[in-house]
Length: 443
Image (cartoon, rainbow, N blue to C red; front, side):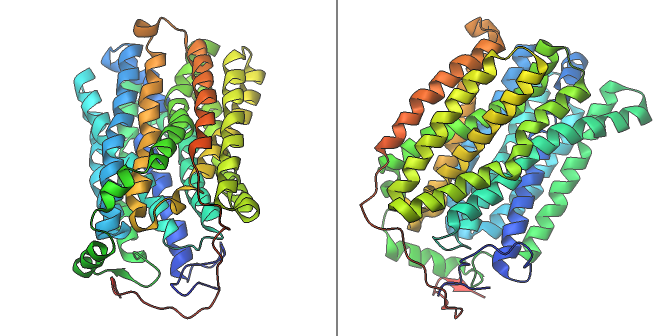
């Protein structure tokens, strides 16, 4: 595989699993993929949980909000940890520790216990930051947008697969136990075990950078020499906060749909739990290619118009996403709701890919922190948007909640014009295969 002088891959070779770049590529998207089974595995079964625990729809919304809100805090911490101890150790512990509440949620006996379990499970959502960080350090500027979008997209694919697979697991357990109330509890054991095993695999088969793993003490010294106050510099960069807002308008919206689609179809279109899960899963399945397309076009626009070209593409994707969401909210028949869901899904996920084709160029010396803040924006946006779906607060039907959410995204799309870079060409990339190790890296 051809690489830059610091070992970053200049192209994506999907079937080359011998190179560390591609091994990390595949394991990091797979880890993120499995995290969705823990994070949203309960979503397709919420109708049963609601009946079992005797809780209301608004309380279900509260649990969705806490599962997403807890991720905001964790993403900020995880980004900092990636910068300081490396993505390998960070991901390993997140996966292993995150598996515990996933298994234990089946022990909840009331609303408060269920809410607490979902809060701890929300920490798993911080896995996205590690996936983007680890991909960014493995790929060169000419391909990093596509690489980031693909690992994130294939990971996000877990959101769709979860919606489709968990109802099947639920049905299989139900056939064996004969009890719906027991079936949803036992169904969550599988995702927990998968996360635990993935944590062990990630530790032994990845490394922090193309040259090797972090030498923690030396890395800290080098970081101090490069910048006395990197955190302050990142926090003062307004572009980071604009991207925070933008990511809330795309990934935040995706999280809202992931947590509400199945219940929306059950309550408003009279579907059974299996059918609702299958249709809701179509939204996430678009991640197979949609987010990658967003990153790919980001790289292409970058080649033509430099870094500001990437920003222009981000505006286009986000603007069309808003119109597609408004269209989705007005559909009232099953064929139309499916068609509009697919169209909307295409652009919400391309917007996400376009966002992270810009992120690696904001501040390369604090990539983890920038990725963490922007990633947290997705969850913050989801929490804010979920207030629209609390009927006792807004009095809105969910169809109208999606409608108003579309106009909010429309307004946010114009904030992309505030993201500016110096008018320089996109970074050029050389392709020598000789690696030059850095002082902060230990093999």
